[in-house]
Image (cartoon, rainbow, N blue to C red; front, side, top):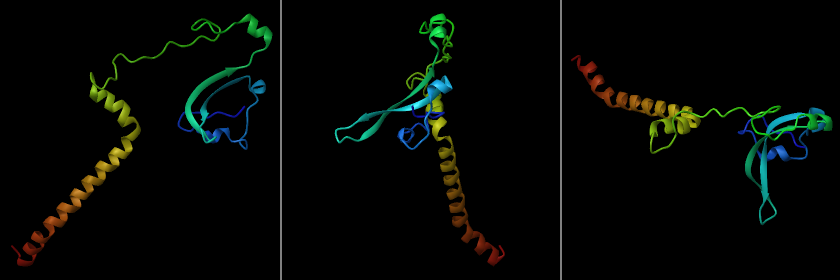
Length: 142
């Protein structure tokens, strides 16, 4: 099977190219990664329809019979309880927190660079605006 990616940002359709290395699940026995979901369009092209994070485990028959899985939060491979926040991220109830967690997380550096560029333009503009007056004062020694 194709090797998955470690995070969702690098999970693209390039992972499914036949030239890339593959993973033998019977040798690895356990695998956790992200894989792209693809669908065929009417023009017989494939497009990425989504991403999925999976954890696959290959067990021997004896091990599978001793420790059946699929019981949710019961052993042997229980799911951890979700880490849910105490407050909601609804735009209506808490707009600043939603803005901070949604927009600032992905665009923080772009926003800071834009604000820095705008401040630099204002600084240069005010220097150009004030320069002729100070130059005349310097010439007239006033």
